[in-house]
Length: 230
Image 1: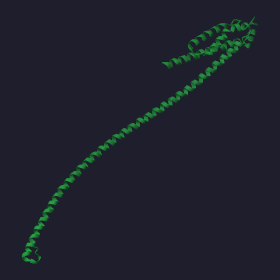
Image 2 (image 1 turned 180 degrees about the horizontal axis):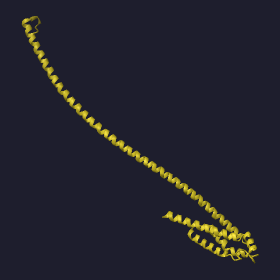
Image 3 (image 1 turned 120 degrees about the horizontal axis):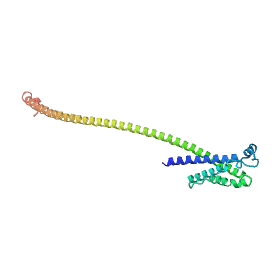
Image 4 (image 1 turned 90 degrees about the vertical axis):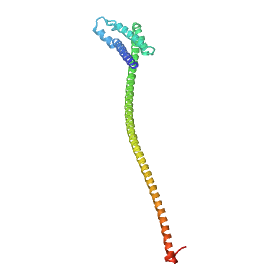
């Protein structure tokens, strides 16, 4: 994947940079004044020679360094790496500088290159720390989002249960209303029937009262004419 290739490239670049630093520091170390003085004292015939001149193959180290630079340039592709150009210039100018009687400028250039590489390493460390923090933040956000989703799902489940219970209550209320409507209708019908019977009874009672009044009046005509009503 892209992330895997990026990680592999970064690992190779770091390894190559470490190798360049090691080679540069080695070349510098072998050509420092203290080292030369030491070999002047310990190796016969080396009083006026640098460590390169008394048998240690610094040229081989330079060749290895140049090869490492070339490999690093290929891996960097179009990315500009000024420290690689600086190191190549320093190593290529080594023989010329040494022949002129001094390696100070080359050493200074190597020192500068080492400083650049160390600065890059510090920047990489800072970037790594930043990326780690961002990954931690992303992980925290992911966990928070997962908790929010879980809470939302739980709330949805509870809402669905409440909706189901409410639906059952509505169905029960509707059944109760229908039963009440039926009971009211039956009671109304019963009252209508009872009222009809009552009205019929009242009509019958009224007719009977009139009949009795008529009979009483007729009797009064014979037995009590004063109370008779013609």
